[in-house]
Amino acid sequence: MAARRWTCGAALLAAALALLLAGCAHTPPKRGGWNAPPAKTGPVRSGSLEHPKSRWTPVDWSDLPGFDADDTADAWNAWIKNCERPLSVFAPLCDQARQMSLATPEEQRDWMRAHLQPYRVEPAWGGGASGLLTGYFEPYYAATRLQQPGFDAPLYAPPPGLARRKPWYTRQEMTQLPDARDQLAGSVIAWLADPVDALILQIQGSGRLLITEADGSQHMARLTFAATNGQPYRSPGKWLLDQGAVRDATWPGIRAWLAANPDRLNDFLWSNPRVVFFHEQDLPPLDAQSGPPGAQGVALTPGRSIAVDPQSIPLGTPVWLVSSGPQANLARLAFAQDTGSAITGALRADYFTGWGPQAGDLAGRLKQPLRLWVLWPRNP
Image (cartoon, rainbow, N blue to C red):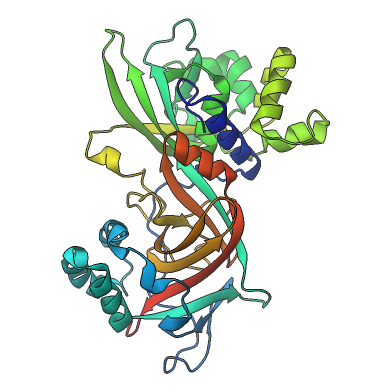
């Protein structure tokens, strides 16, 4: 998955920079997932289903904490989006799922009980049933179409020579080498006020911009992942820790260090050689009600979409998510619609919190235990 420096203040920036340590930039939209569990088969409840990184153990619906209390109607928009690019095993249920969009939560839960079998997700190699839930969100910034005083941090579309040279120039080389600058000259999408914001948006992999055009008009756009420069990701937060510059790489500590060491800003930025390039898309009001497309290729739904490890849970799978901690108490229907480089293992998920200051604050603070159940068709 940043900060809205121009309106949101330090709280949102703290959330954004906390994500620098995770390095959880989400992948570009792509078709993914399984058509059926690559596992042992047999009657339901006869045994676990084995997968590359997880084991699914069949359970009763009564074993799902809080299932009868969730407002599933709030989640049904995510289900309908799921049906835009469903796994083949879920496709036969999509017509009924669309019809159930007007049903009550009680009717929706009864429908799920009739058509789906819950499985508790566990690590393939054994171990505990508790994992880790973190959060991510969609950054939101002011930007200008043309470079001007106060706005000189560029965001790029893929340059023409990118595909011919892999890996491409590093972040530092893109700043310093004339050849790299020449190739990038015609690829600037927009300019941000803060180069750290540009770095955060690249780590998140997508974001929203309120762009001021040359004539003074403004419009909303969404940037989505297009490509990278093929360089490895290095955590700038970890770089500061390794330097002994800060003891705790939260935003206040990093901000204070940057304020005290303005001449080290480039060193901080260049510690991560990886650069993400973007596509620009118009963001009409209707589309602005949903998040960016995840790895499944469908728009993410705040509070109902999660990123998972596809080797544990296939993209497009409904799941029951339970997590309790100081930031949130969650027991709800969610959908595995995204993935990310830091999201690995059976019981690991990134929770899409939405966009704006509250979403950014929650995403940056969320780090608590997780339990998951997949909801799989009874007759795939």
